[in-house]
Length: 88
Image (cartoon, rainbow, N blue to C red; front, side, top):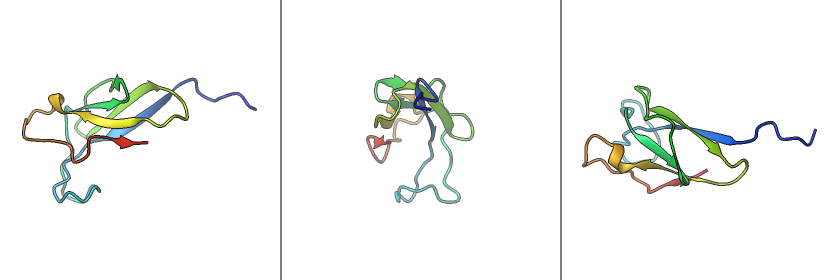
């Protein structure tokens, strides 16, 4: 069928502290609880949980979107994302 399976897209994001700045979560790098994730102009439905995970829903299907972290949602003001955003 040529009918789309879903009317909107979503992203599941995991947030962690990349202690060695290699862009990959290695063993021992802690997950970040309480961070808000942005996807284009949308913000995650909830902050990240204890497993560092959250969802952003309501995205356009099959269109690239920049995923980032709302720095103001981080409890420690000295924490900053290694990248401004990652396009997926």
